Each structure stands twice: as structure tokens, then as C-alpha cells.
Length: 123
Image (cartoon, rainbow, N blue to C red; front, side, top):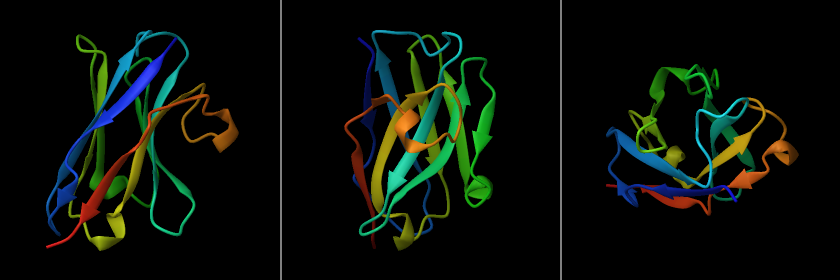
């Protein structure tokens, strides 16, 4: 049974960079043909796909966030990480990691989710 768990800072100051880590258990992040995604939900808004890293290590980004986003992985720790830079209050959201058979697929296709972690951007 694959499980995902997000971790990271709860509070970040504007203009800073934060990192979130998704720790995966019960399955390898290098297993064909899974993609490991980051999705967020800001207050009062819908789910927003941010990016993904595939089983091969290739990365994919939302065009609207590409300039501020970096996704990497540590296969030894079976973790993948999101970095978001130059944050503003609009980046306040619950951030989720999720597994799917593709990057940026429709929401029903994300069959495994972490519980989500709240990140607030405030001075």
C-alpha cells in the first residue's frame, strides 16, 4: 500500500523560497510508469497542478509556475521535493503530493494522495 506524506514549513515570508518534501512508502518512486505530482489548493479556489517528476526523473511544470518552481528527487530516500521561489500571499495554500500515471492529468486520475500540508505566506 503506497503512502505519501508531505512535510515542510508552515509559515514562509514573502519573497522567500520554501521547500516541501513528499516521502513515499510502500513503493518506489522509480517504478514504471508512475508520475509524482505536486498539487495545491488556495483558500476558496480549486485544485491547481504545479508540476511533477516522472519515474525516469524527467520533470514537468505548469507553465504559469514554471519560472518559480523546481522539482527534484532523492531516490535513496524515496522522496521528491518541491521548491517554490519568490512567494507571495497568493501562494498560501494546502499543498499535496499525489501519484498518477501521468503528469498534470485530470484530478480523478490521482489515485494516491498525501494528506496535504498547509503553507501560509505572511510577513
